[in-house]
Image (cartoon, rainbow, N blue to C red; front, side):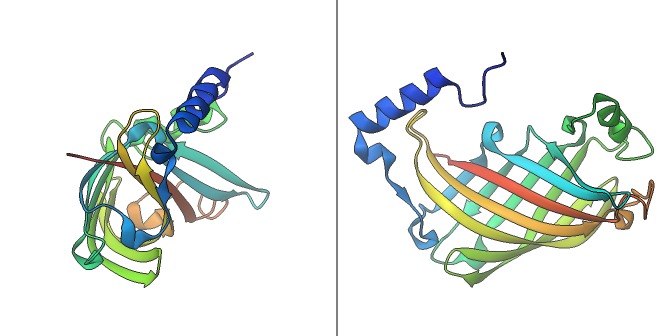
Length: 205
């Protein structure tokens, strides 16, 4: 039997650490309390998932991993914050190994020619206590276009396992893949692609 992502020994260790040092378990849930500074993406717990409507039957999901990037965060003046993210396209995974290979091919993402997708923020605007609208330039399949993400702050604090100060966010958005030249099977596989990003960032001392 395969072990889960959060295995029993790891869970036991985490519980023990939290019980022995309650201060390390403190997580702030108000965006105004996040520590300012320079952050790097923590790739092990950052995921970029996408969803398309497949032939009108199912909402089909896939995920990208091994994300890298930086976040310069100023909670007192969020509008000057900057986000830069790079996503290796050949990290794409679905529940089908055959489809994984097809998506990397030249009829879809063409990972050999365009190995990375990138997002560079151009503006950050607060839309609530823990929410922001982040606009930036998305480059995918060799095409760059402005796109907007809705970002929600989840929590921040010292990770009990690695002792690193970590901030976590969730971002959502919708793009049209045909805008980026990825037109295979449109409209049978929907042009609209729903994005959901679980982003973990570690503060750099």
